[in-house]
Image (cartoon, rainbow, N blue to C red; front, side):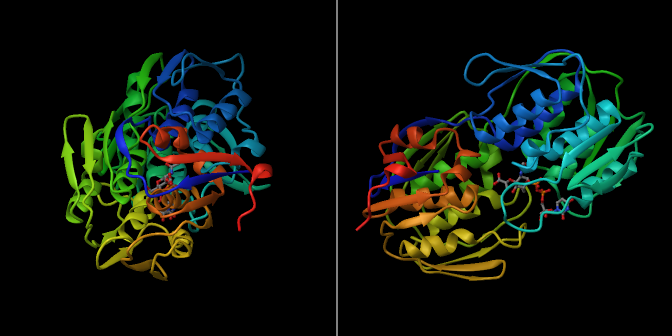
Length: 425
Ligand code: EPZ
């Protein structure tokens, strides 16, 4: 149990390279179980969720070797187990991607019901509907999802809502099913395209990823490839809001700017100066940010994963910023903590209103989930005085060495083990 300590009020300045995308990396790792040969996955972020997915790969019998900081070699072992280790799988939500890849590869799979951030009900009915359409049966037993099929066949799936997880999962299963699967109302997120590209690089046939209709034609076996994960648009967006909130001037490299159109638009609307090149984004803060409204939507709308970081910034903007969280029922846990630092945010169900305040004051706050944690770090960077952020384990799930990297931008930030905590007076 550790905490992050921030001496706030220092504008972030400098250049930072954005790491590989968490939400792609976890799916690419599950997809690697599809092949009998060796694949190389590059640009994977050094985060807890990636390490947990690698532990599951090893536990089911894959050989995984790390070469260099971001590069992993993954090869089939002698025997691939359809039973994933429940004690590891419950640690994160993305373990459910083994449902798709192991169903395809083994015709049978057991995965513990998924964990992950507590931000709403997060059912998996659309995943199960898709597997059923591919001729698999499912059973919920002993807190596990158990899938089985005599023969996986292509099918027609219409998703009831835009769902990243179910789109990727059904795509993974369909990649080895006999015939063609058509997925309609598929999610448009860049992570879906990244997984489709990886499947194709291994010799699969996925067409239309990035549109609402995806066609997957199953193949009998997959080959080897070298594949690089896309940059993390959510990590990039987090640093963009941190730059704006701290009054800084930060250039992010290794970004795909089109993935961040909604974020760039909102920051510009609030008065920030944003320069975009082919693969960099520079944020020059405006000392008098204006309030803007945020409605979270599936891609290309404003991402729910940046709602909390955006709120940490907009709570300091002049005027009233309104937030409408349409993806999750309870993703405003950070508002109460931001209020402890001086924000004036009122939450009502899936809506929240921030009346802009002059500034934050350092306080002891607790991260209750990954992006809430990021928002508290942003507030701490902007605050007068010292902020103590507990719940660091949530932040470690998705941000690669956030403390070191913010230090490289001039922040006075450090992390400390709980036993060494100084008494706060
Ligand atoms: C992914 O979650 C991300 N996680 C989330 O990242 C992200 O918030 C979310 O997509 C939306 O962009 C990973 O990629 C590992 P969904 P996922 O299926 O796939 C409902 C972060 O901070 N739904 O797109 O689980 C669901 O409840 C996080 O990095 C069903 O009702 O999200 C939600 O309201 C947290 N039934 C909406 O759809 C289903 O079967 C979108 O969920 C599936 C989803």
